[in-house]
Image 1: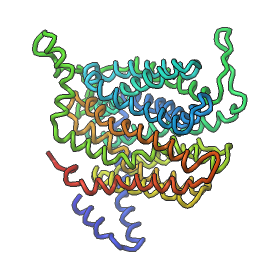
Image 2 (image 1 turned 30 degrees about the vertical axis):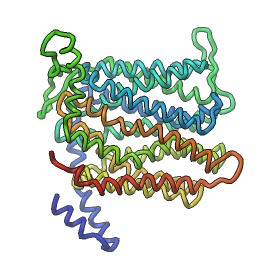
Image 3 (image 1 turned 60 degrees about the vertical axis):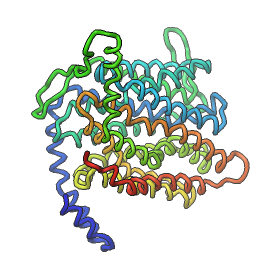
Image 4 (image 1 turned 90 degrees about the vertical axis):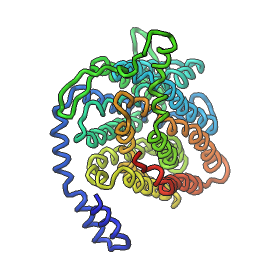
Length: 475
């Protein structure tokens, strides 16, 4: 590692051919390392493949709904950009609140039951958003059932990947896990553009003699409902297991280390909150949480890709623009690059991979300050995605790797809080930026909007560099 970093440092100011030679050398062992990891994963338990399949399905459901959410809020509920942005932000914040409250519950009930509850709640919420028109039911689904289901399902899938892989295959396993999320997002983006043919007419669904008419955005919600139903079925088939370092299957008993010392009510209550209190006492967790808070700026770029970018493209390039495919280009690139970059980022280490990747992602935003065109839109997504392929998969792996066994979900639940709490600010700011710099009437200045977003993204790598000594302490 020291030799690698020494070679990397010596490249400052070097000509382009030396940088190219260094990159080739860094990736030289990639095919062999990837093949060995794939070969090892072939003997993994079925739960690993179920978890990966659920990640694909949930990636499709989540991203297809998220990309059109603000457009649906405006078209069907008649909300302004500002109000739609705050609704989007509040939904994300509630995921963080619920994650904070139920992290200990997930560690107590285990992967299988958490997935069944989570996918069941999301199934109900997406069904309501597909077929119900009364605002009261829509708000219950958006602010109650769906964020609670996502809080149960998001942390526990990463916990499962740790338990279904060995130390040797874990890095590759998390890269595949992240690639599966992006595969689902790719399919979601493509489906959005395909569903555009029903923009004017909608779709009629015959069900037990009833004909239900779904407008365009509810067609997309209905497809997410079907995908979630499949996830629920896979969750029912899972077992509560883990594998040891030799790949042997073992039964895992959730919450065994948190059994109450007595049968008193006080002891039982303390046993339920113990995973969170134990986590809160550990300095390594708070350093990791600081790491995540400092990364909010660059992590928010994916939120703007979902909320601001589609509205920006429709306003600047016309209402018929295929924004689904442009947004889907992001997960396509990440899906391909994340596993291929494993040898390189392994050599760099977690901190440097996240630092360099976040710099690249932030740089991509500034491309849109050159003006609106298909080429600048594509270049923005490509550069953003290259950086994301380096930094994003490392976060989940790092979180579960530092978590003690049996408390992975508590770590993952608490670790998601900064991202989802930031959605409130991102949502409100997204609505404000669109209303200010892309008004329906008046002077537009989208380049200024992207300059502001780019500067906020660039703040992340600057801050994690400033606080690097605190973040990278060993104890």
